[in-house]
Length: 216
Image (cartoon, rainbow, N blue to C red; front, side, top):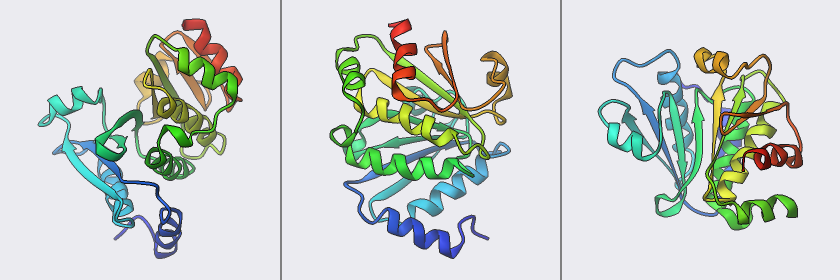
């Protein structure tokens, strides 16, 4: 039984028909798969089969520990989206990108395929990212039923694609309760900036930029 019905498959084929270049989806799971590991693996595998420009690699988190460390993957299920020539923009998904977050995954596949030149952020944000000297790690906590979460995820991932200094994770809050407790996630989306600054809700780039400036 497939996770994506025929209509959804056809819709995805249309959305991915104009991909600007190849995209590689690397999924980390384990031999005895966690609660959402199997579903994540199956979802990404089905998705990749709908475009000749999308490939998927399934890796065991323990067996391929070196590769996980290379990609800074520290929990599963995890998806790393890499562009042409395996270029890593720091775009990560932790937890299954289901519900509203499936649209984020499709958007980010297209954005990674197009690369930094296609990112459209306001002038102030681009100027900040161009001058950024320290690493920025954005963690966007979401739930699949939140209609406001995708815009926060897409914004964080756009910044990661635009700047080599930024990495950004979607973190499914209910799959990683220890992290939700650590970062006091009482509602979503909640974006954590370098462990110390927090942004509540789906906000304009300027508000996220203010939080990033506070730690830079």
